Length: 401
Image 1 (spheres, rainbow, N blue to C red):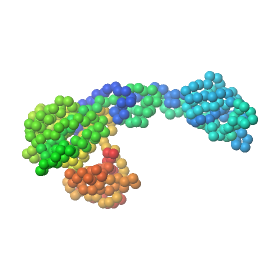
Image 2 (tube, rainbow, N blue to C red; image 1 turned 180 degrees about the vertical axis):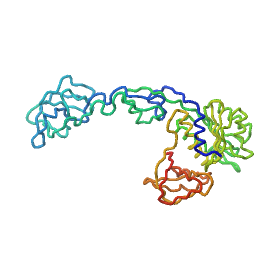
Image 3 (tube, one colour; image 1 turned 90 degrees about the vertical axis):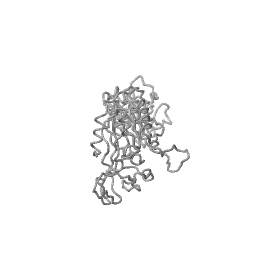
Image 4 (tube, rainbow, N blue to C red; image 1 turned 135 degrees about the horizontal axis):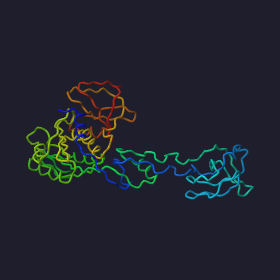
């Protein structure tokens, strides 16, 4: 059996270099950046007002207060999107709005709330509070200077990255091509949801979980029909899936039973098995194979085993295939709310629930078929073999939510 870290490293080392494509920025969210993007301009692009009020020379209002306001002549107004052609002279002010360019001569903005129009002298404004130079002003380049790296090769673009890039005028981005991932579920006992069940038959649920997990990792899932437990059917299904997909993920048929045909069918097609079995619980009978520049990930059939092996072994491969640098599950510090132990000889990825205060509790039964505890979990706790931890112990939880 192979240790998990060795298995992941071997998978990542086997993958081909990522292939990039250029897409409109609005389609780049969730994609892996293939080429670093630097700011083509300052942000803000020009010095502007941070709020509605009056642009002033700070030196003109150093004595202003509510009891003794300073009178300034109103020299005009600057709506957002327009500019003031002249220069603000001493003793003058300009009506200004959030985002409006700060006029030449002005160095501060007095909030609208600290002003009112003179009731006695038309065209004058009473300034009721002093301001410092630069107050309520957004200087050019205050957020981002031209040439600054905004996002680097290997970053996954999120909504905030997209907003920043759009703000500096970026229209397109070079991103890693998403892999098309074929999904196969094997087992003569499996039926599609909604179909009547006969004796010994069950509804198939692995593809329903793996499809969204693939999409969350940047892949494009393609679901294929259920595969009965025969060598011929398994071989035909694999051949069809590989014909149109970059990677194929199967569930079931990878253990040592006489009805487990995935490994044999794959080799009959000319595929090479890179390794089989990983020293982990759940999910020991995991298969990784290569067929030219395409890859097989054979997951166990038990739903929890399929879910966990996908997160720990397939998910990193999907992200690296697209060029991502960080491919592991996010790890968060937490504190055990109850004692836990692993008396087995393989590391146990225990389903746990982390509450809002950061306390960790078992999510329920840890059997590899127990879906209720998987649905209740929001993380995995990595327990090495022979380890017992007391309540209150600091731990690290792998999160997928």
